[in-house]
Image 1 (cartoon, rainbow, N blue to C red):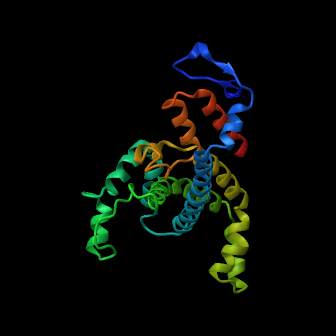
Image 2 (image 1 turned 60 degrees about the vertical axis):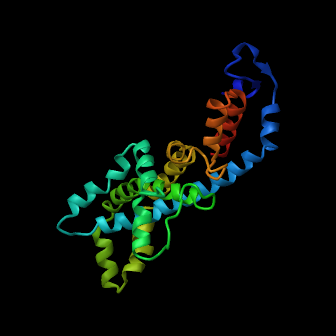
Image 3 (image 1 turned 90 degrees about the vertical axis):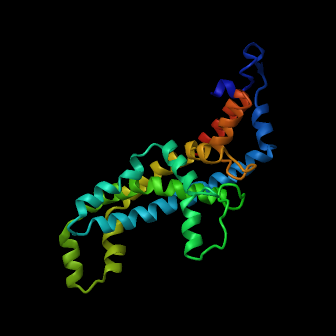
Length: 245
């Protein structure tokens, strides 16, 4: 990849590869689509990972309680994580569909919107719509990981805190979160890397459109490589993403 990034390499002209040094990187810094994709990547990573973590933390805390169908709940929460990304992309695309989508139907029926919304065709909504799909897919990872961490906290700590008069919020802040800080840090690190590199759901749902509204860095590198066949330029984009990560 490093070697390719230093060449002007077109896949349909493999014998015409020209050494250009850092010219690809210089061109990237002047590429408006690169900066758009970089900004979208920041929104994508912060928004998706942050919401996945919060939803996963709440789910783990709930699943750590005792109730009669806890075993079934723990099994069901894994379903989004187990589904292939392509299936999730297709499923959410149908849910967002302007004509037959269940989301528009529900929102119109309960009066939140007056008419169906083209969620994936509007530049101001498309990225948020895809982020919602990925949040749903990825929160079980946090839920399962954090739940495993919660199981290691001694119950005596909570009993002592309760005797001292601590409420649930204080227990969460002073016992639960500090006890699983390492688990949370590891989960955040891994999920940040995975989300930053993910492009399959975006590719299935919008292909990066409308326009460049859902372009992220890995998707832009993919498009330059496999649509434009500019492997040298795409390799340089991939290296920049790697350095940022």
